[in-house]
Length: 342
Image 1 (cartoon, one colour):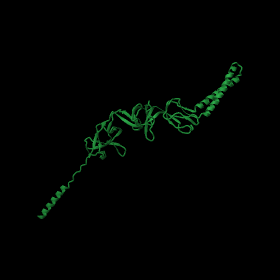
Image 2 (tube, helix red, strand yellow):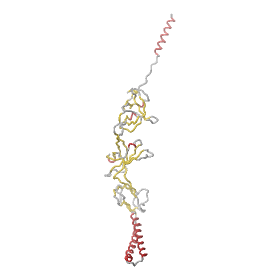
Image 3 (cartoon, rainbow, N blue to C red):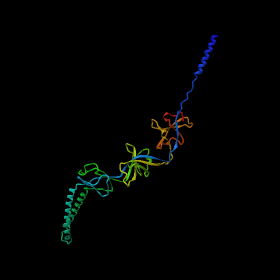
Image 4 (cartoon, rainbow, N blue to C red):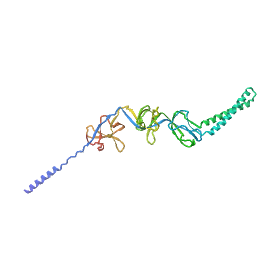
C-alpha cells in the first residue's frame, strides 16, 4: 500500500514540473520613433554663396623707356582721366637728343627753303635738289623718332579709371621691380566672383538675377546678373567660377570686398522634400531613409537620391513618393525590417 501511495506522489510531482517548464515565446521589442511625411517642395528656393568683388578691368601700366623715376603724380585711389599724366622718368638724355635732332631739322629745312626758289628757276642742278630733299626727310624722321622717345619718358592713363596699386617711388629704376609700376582699375562696373559646387553648377545660367549684401558697407544690398559661368572646374577645389556683373556708379563697391550672394531659382518640375534628420549615409556612401511600411508596424531601408537643402529639409530626387512616411527621429536605432511604434 505504501508503494502505491509513493508512486502516486512521484507522478503528481512530475506532472507539476512539466507544467511549470512550458516555454514562453519572447516578442521582439518595438522601437519608438517619430515620423514625417514626404511633401512637395516649394515652387522656388535659394542658393547662397560667398563672393568677392573684382574690378571689371585691371590694366598694368609700365614705362616704355628705361631710366630713373623722377615724379609720380597720383596716389592709390585717385580717379584719373584718359590721357592724364601719371608719372615720368628722368628725360635729360632724351631731351638733349631731341634738341640736337631739332637743330639738324631746322638747318635742313632752312637749306631746303633757300634752294627751292633757285630750283624753281631752273638754276639748281637736279642732283643737288634731290640731295636737299633727302636731307630734309632724314632730319624730319630723326626729329619724330627723338620726339617719340622723349614722350615715352611720361606715363599717361590710357582710359578713365582708378589707381588700384602704386608699386614704385621716385628715385627707383623704372625696371627695378617685377610688378607693374602703376595698376589702373575700372570699377564703374564690377564683377562678383563666386565658386559654385559641381552638384549645383547645372542650376546656374547666364542672365539669372541675383542679390547680395556687403558687410563692409553695413550690409547694404545690391542686384546683379550672372554674365559668365566657367565650363571648367578648378583642379583642386572642384568648384566652378561664376561672375555676376553689377553697376557701380557711386564707386561704393571696391575690389576685394566680401559679399553674401543669394540666387533665387524657380523649379522646372515639382520635387519632394524630407526632414534632413531623416537622411543618413551608409559605409558605402549610399544615401538612405527608413520608410514606414503600409501597415505602419515596421520600416524598410530605402536608398534615395538627394538634391539641395530646402529650409529645414532636403530635396529627394528619386526613391520616395509623395505622402510616404519616413522616420525622422530614432533612425540610429533602426535596421532593415525593424518593428516600430510611433
